[in-house]
Structures are given as C-alpha cells and as structure tokens.
Image 1 (cartoon, rainbow, N blue to C red):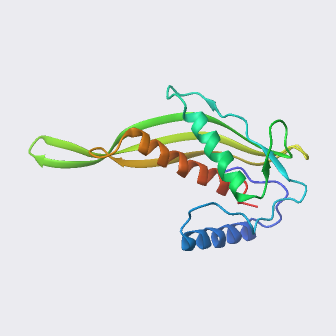
Image 2: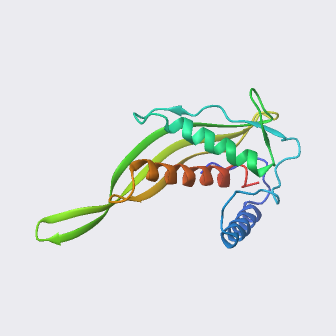
Image 3: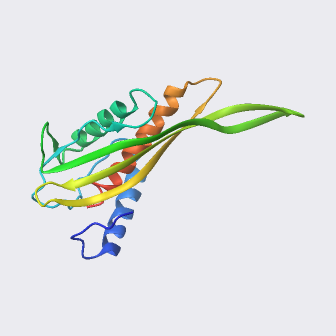
Length: 176
C-alpha cells in the first residue's frame, strides 16, 4: 500500500478506520456511509471515469464503475461529476478468474465441485486534483463465491464487484 501524503498520524488513521469498520459491521453493512469522514475540506466533487479493462471478461469494468459511482452518490459526501472533479477515482481491471473453490469427494477418484469463486483485480488511484496529489494508489482483489448447483457465474461476479467496491471505498474515500 502506498502511504498517503499529508497525514501526520498513520496510527490515528488506522484507529479511525477500524472504528468505522466496526460500526459498519454492527449496522449490517448495507450501504456505505462516510458521515464521519475527514476528507480534506476542498474536496466536494469526484469524477469516476470508466475503468479500463485489460481482461477478456466483457462488461466487468462497466459494472465496477457503475457500482462505485452509485455507492459514492448514495454516501452523499462527494458529488460525482462528469469531467474533472476536485478528486478522481481511476482504475484498471487487470485480472478476472472463475475458479473451483470447494470440492465434494463422493467416491474414490470422484470429485464434484460445489462452489466456485470469482476474483476481480484492479489497480486503483484516488487523486486530489486540486493539489495534484495521490491520496491512495494500490492493487485490490474482490472475491465472490457462488454455489454451482443453484447459482451462475454472474452471481459470483456481482459479489466480487461488491467486495471490490467496498475495498476501493475503504482505501480511498473512507480512509480519510
């Protein structure tokens, strides 16, 4: 993880983030909220351009960008804008996989896959455009498990995207 510039106490930031995550878990984690955020006061708007996609999985970048924009809008902290905002969240989808996750061994030499896991990896940057400063830059992986007998890969992909968006917000907007 890259250190954020302008922070005087990484310990205080970690303590604050841990308290925020504990409160979110206790509340059920439905919608991301940032009411206790200490984002720099000059950041009022954010642009979230369509993430680039370096994978062969169609529409995954659009799905991530749409969900991220929706969560930021629902948080009512930074206002998403078209064009250049006070801040930007940029990303590149660098990996996508759908792999066996859980096996059920029925008989000798018989293996039945019961669950799969979709993993989506992105490099993401949260930038302060006003001060030309990178507030966070890193690589994150979201994961989503789905039951092969009753669900589809799309279910796992949705869970992986939700997990990824949660992580992006934790490492960018929420970390302030």
